[in-house]
Length: 127
Image (cartoon, rainbow, N blue to C red; front, side, top):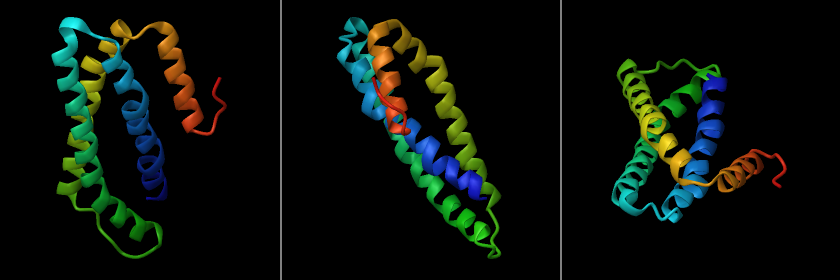
């Protein structure tokens, strides 16, 4: 319970911040030409996913905190399923749409800078 909670409180949260603070702005700034409308719709949809995932996570987080503290609690299967289904759909959208678009539209040096910003967000040195 502690590890699951820690993962979604840190790694998953960092991942969403990586996208919203670094990757999405880089995509928008890429001046995608004919891709601009599609790009904005994709970014807006992924950011909406982040908010939805946070809302689905919070009740699970509370239950996992109870379990981690040794108090009796049960994870509602329907809530777990809704969360995992939403996360799987989000990941598929990132892998099928976001990452190929980023690879095509963002120059290698900008991708490297994004990678450094992500590393710094996790406590590594940037630069």
